[in-house]
Amino acid sequence: MFLEKQPDNALHLLEKIETADAILVGAAAGMSAACGFDFFYHNDSYFQKYLGEFHKKYGFTGAFNGFYYRYPSSEAHWAFLARMGYMEYECETGKPYYDLMTLLAGKNYHIMTTNQDFQFTRVVPEEKLSAIQGDSRYFQCSRRCHDEIFYNKDMIYAMNAAIDENLCIPSELIPRCPQCGAELEPWVRGYTFLEGEKYRDEYRKINEFLQQNKNGRILFLELGVGRMTPMFIQEPFWNLTYQLPQAYYITINPKDALLPKQLAQKGRAIKEDIADVLRKAVERKKKQEG
Image (tube, rainbow, N blue to C red; front, side, top):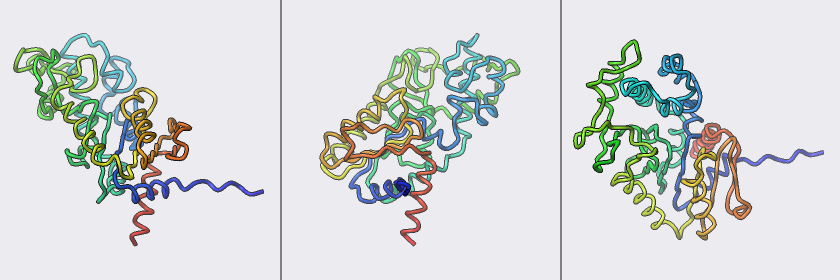
């Protein structure tokens, strides 16, 4: 009796990257989770270190639930937002991000992401990155009275330093719109998400990349896209792979790697840990390069 030989997914990934004329990466929450950063959905070590006090007081699990919690005051709400932002700024860059960029070095690529934790901004030039669901480094007017967004690092650090024993910030530190006086809010997907100039520019970069490369051997590489919002990356990648004659699709996700039967000859679903696959692909690349 012979055991069926398992496919070498890391080698397959490397070969497809090396032979592609263009690579469009679509990355979601699973990419950061592969780094060990699962603080958005669970009380992991980062959550406990930075937000454990808020969990103890309010009882929510994960930063995502904390983001939408109904706090007793704006001062309490902003204390949470400041600490969450501080955690994101202080969090180191995950190794899978560096491994991905090693694989893409010298290639014609663009990256689109629904992640708002700005990990990609540490390793990817602005012109090669599209954050299509917002970016936690920015605030917007909660009333959307104008189109400007505001870089927030100084505000985040000042608010975090002022959080008191009641987990509140001083009222005078609450960020407010310079135009109308309303409170600002994080520029991330929500009920009042500002789809203004910055948002449109993110999609412009994607569309220009696709227009320039649609007739070549384009690889759609999906990393960590789950079933919560498949309409932003996964379903467009499926449709484009099906439509474009030389397109190929790879999805890597330990739980939700799906390959439609229509793409059976034009793709591969890798149901493995993203960090492991990228690490092995980098090791193979370095071995090939001697």
